[in-house]
Length: 121
Length: 111
Image (cartoon, rainbow over the protein chains, first blue to last red):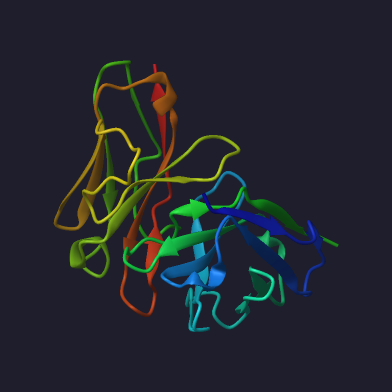
């Protein structure tokens, strides 16, 4: 059973860059056949898909965040990462990493537990 | 403002059935057969309950079913159980540029 675990700073200052890493265990990120996604959820609010990456390095991003987002993959560490620059208080949320099969049109099938990131000075 | 519209809350008694609606447009719900539903208990990550409008992942009880008519998708939960009390989110493919959009979520209360 694959497990995903988010890690990174829980507090980021406005205008700075939010950086999170998702470590995958119980399976190889290089095995293919999956998209690796980031999804966020502000407190008390709904879900927002941020973007995804395939093992080939191909990425797709939410158009509303595209100018500020970079998702990358490190197969040697079995990890993928999220960078969101120029953050504001509106970026405060629980950030989830997730895995989705490439045969199904869903943003996530397996999820990490989520990590709270607060943007504040 | 979420792209897909869901009722804020629904409720039902144990054993009853409830239906949660999810209204979009012809650019998302109405245009594709790729609606999914997620269940989220407080403090937990969401769980995929329905995909491709009507399909259930392995392990999801057949009490959960999905459907779609025009620009509105629906999740029906029959034989309500206390453990079904949670937030439910719909999600739809919205084309290759946007990929997916979510609904604002519906809180299900089991009375």
